[in-house]
Image (cartoon, rainbow, N blue to C red; front, side, top):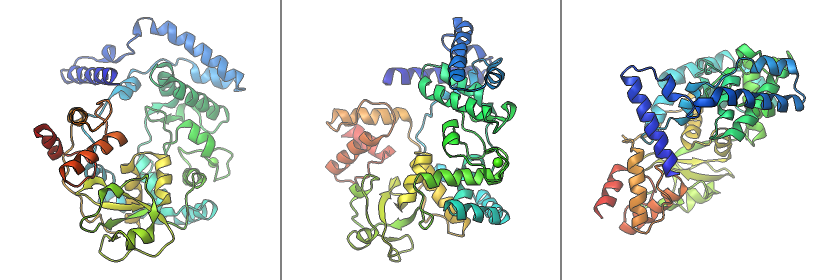
Length: 410
Ligand code: CA
């Protein structure tokens, strides 16, 4: 892991430096095997064409879609780019749930109320959540990505890093074209092939998109009925409960055992309330409901705490980022008038280099954080928690500059 990761990061650095001094970076960012790439790509495309035809797609669709397709350097560049710092919840939430976005979401929910209620009646997903996903995925349709989905997916499918995954997505994309849901020139999306106003990748489209306006096409690019119903159908199929919310911000009692904060641990709401002393963020008792819940601490013990329910786990199927899932829930709450979160700490992003150093230091002290890779995964959090317990500080498994400094000193 470490070797290629470092290498990719170095490459990104070089590209940034070249860009900074105004050098044309086309050459530097092209596929490393660019020497005989043209010939190799053409032959690869021929094989893909055969596979698409064998699946029963029409030659007219496939040939039109693959005509003139060449690898897109900017797609590989995006795929190789890596963050240099951790993304903090404070920073993420402040950029994703802004006052402007909350107000616009409220206006749009009022404007489309009748449609959203029809979608809710059919699929059982509350309008505020549909508008929240719509806002976070594409800023209500403003940003759907300007890449040709076929070209982007062909680039990634031909590239060696995740070729099997993207090859399957490319074949799904050809199928979507062949079924006539969208025309080739309007089939745009993100560099990774996420399409339309709900940013579905082609396999999600094929499995979950629906034609709600009844024109025979599933159009998640332009038709609001199709957009809302497709999102609702996806959530519904993945277990969404229309009579439950996603979770809530809570207040933890003094001395709370942070080892209980894990999505792997679910307890009835009554237990959290009566056994562990958790209350609503405003200090009032938790509601009485027959629900299982888990605790999420996105900024460690100094930040806000959340109890999350089943719908939160469904949001994680849509996008497995715990920060994204909290933002979807919080924006949905804000749309219907909830207050901003009680407290967002001033968090300093940590460089991934410092995370790597922290992992190495934990390993050296006998707390197994795995191969240092700069990524804060389950094993790293467990190792950090064990170290925190050993030195008698709150064991939240959350990396901060202070704890890394402490590790260096100890
Ligand atoms: Ca339609």
